Image (tube, rainbow, N blue to C red; front, side, top):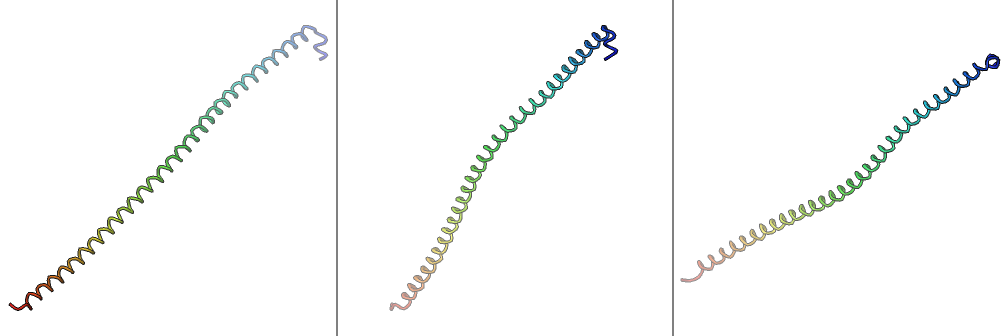
Length: 119
């Protein structure tokens, strides 16, 4: 400071340089902050988009789960109907076998009556 006080031109020049350095540092700081803000803003927008996509995906997953449950119910109903058809088919076979047995027994009795009847 003693050097500047002895030379007023140097003091003025030093002050000017100091102000220029402060202005340059301020500009640099503002540019860096602006650059960082652009990145932060982009990251924020990306996060918002991701949040929206996540919500959409959750809704779609819930709808798919509901639809899948309905499909499972339909398949189970179909399987039950097939089992019932199989049960009816077995019941029909059983009745058919019983009817054939009865028909054979009636035929046997009828033939026996014909043979024992006096002619």
